[in-house]
Image (cartoon, rainbow, N blue to C red; front, side, top):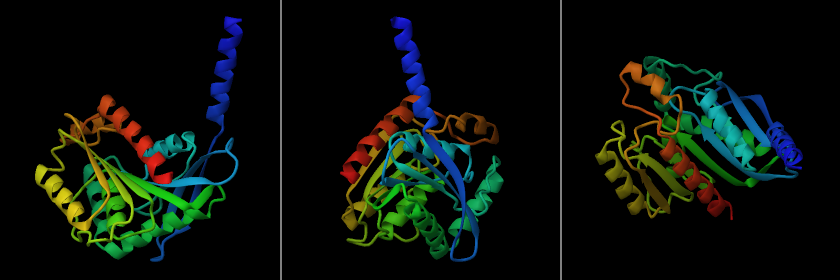
Length: 260
């Protein structure tokens, strides 16, 4: 009987895993840039469900961003990892990543348009409830989702993981409609203490509903298991399993709160 039960559990586990469906969907921003969205959902769930945008790190739309979309799909959400650089490009070299990021951020309106195009794509999917949308982002992606909240986009919530907190256009009073979760590494030298203080002051003055969580000792990119391999480029980054797990648990609680 014990063997039968074990086999049954394994079968159920495999079935659940196989129920996560993914597809790459081409789309286009208003400036004509060709983009690629990575869509994930659980086809065992019937009907529309809340949707979540995933914005990649400065490396671009790589396997890590796609994995997070699958993770969210496994939690019962409709998830779209969007492309902020165009044509799904990504890199593992910091110089290229910096160039990609600077190009994407040099025009705030263009960055917003690229995010909006991905948001529209997610809403168009039959698995998505267009009235229940949130966004999460990592590193560069954290800045993107925070900037979208600053600009008042129709998102119920945004969550930033080891994200860049600085902005050239601070939120105005009453502009931030989304609830905000920030997961920050206590040992993050790439996002200095003055940026943290400035962000909190900005959010307080804007009257934003936000929660700022510090993961003790965690370095930049603490959620990404591949972070350690980038230390060879002289980057002060590192994976932290405890911080990763705690911040993911925080996200799940946050999403339940914002979606009701």
